[in-house]
Amino acid sequence: MEAIQMIRDAEKYLIPLFNAMGERAFINQSKVLQAFKDNRVRELHFSPSSGYGYSDTGRDLLENIFAQTFDAEAGLVRPQIVSGTHAISACLCSLLKSGDQLISASGPPYDTLANIIKGNQVPGHSLVERGIDYCEIPLISGTEPDLAALSQALSSRTKMVIIQRSRGYTLRPALTVAQIAAIVKTVRAVNPSIIVFVDNCYGEFCDIIEPSSCGAHLVAGSLIKNPGGGLAPSGGYIVGRKDLVEEVSYYLTAPGLGKELGASLGNKRAYYQGFFLAPHTVLQALKGAVLVAYIFEQLGFEVYPRFNEERGDIVQAIKLDNPEMVTQFCQIVQHCSPVDSDVKLEFARLPGYADPVVMAAGTFVQGSSIELSCDAPLRAPFCAFWQGGLTYEHIRLVLHHLIDYFRSGGY
Ligand SMILES: *Cc1c(COP(=O)(O)O)cnc(C)c1O
Image (cartoon, rainbow, N blue to C red; front, side, top):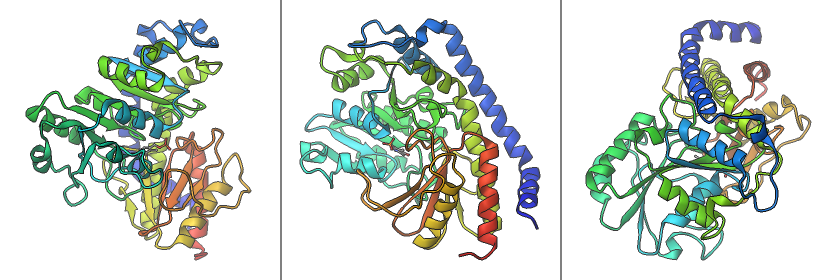
């Protein structure tokens, strides 16, 4: 069978799933539009600001739009937040003091965060080295939050519970918003003053409810992932309770300066337009991930999640067994990219990551992973982590090449 026929057959089978995802994107699009309308966005809000950025109304309005869409009181949406890791790190470092306890309710955190919490790369700077007690509650069978163990671990010293929604570079499923809600409920029952913080990277708009709608006090993510819609050129966001967002803002800029400063320079239109597009862009990525899962399962590979499993993030893992096959998989994605298509990939060390990683990122925005990208750490089980895609057509085209390669026995 021709590769294209295999894709067409898969798409026919996947129509009901695609339709259901389309309905969710429709609801999210209407939420975003409502926030734009309620905040009376005008062209003048896209104008550049400079210097200190006092009275940057375009910046402030965009933060209101993020907050409203995510059901939060306040937001920080800034190009000065250099990445998702920075957004999350700012929340942890500003709110946790020596003697406080931080509990992860979702097992071990993402590679770059493990470094910030436990520290293995920059001695002296980790939370643990600064006197914060850290405790990890593993997921039951690697999938379910262990609410009983969490409840038991909570104490008067517990200041914050952190939840990572996405799978990160692991095979565990992304947490659903319902699971996040159950964690919130458990924490509240013990001590309502404990801050529930969600690393929402890759999770935005995958569901019609966001973590802040079900009680999370603070949520952070990257603008070169889902909520940037593929247009935001850099940055991160934080939304949540007003007092917490303010506290974080004093850490991000300086005490007393907070949110009032920070010129958003000349790219504001891209942030607004990107957020407006984000529900649709995430839909493209989700449809693509489902198609990849379905096809690779047919080709005989293990995939996480399976095509018909509930998705709490846009990440699709494909288990490929050895580093060569992982590199080749990523190389095909790179060859089918609009930028740097002729670049040859290899495993290399990246700041913040413990193991060498290979990354296919032939993207318009450097390292953007709401654009089609595929990466993997050099460790067993050797998996490619696929995510993003600005258009479904592009994803379909890449898949066409992957099918040809993997069926030709070229591995
Ligand atoms: C991407 C990601 C982050 C942050 O990564 P950056 O590359 O710094 O934006 C944090 N947590 C998870 C689960 C992620 O997927």
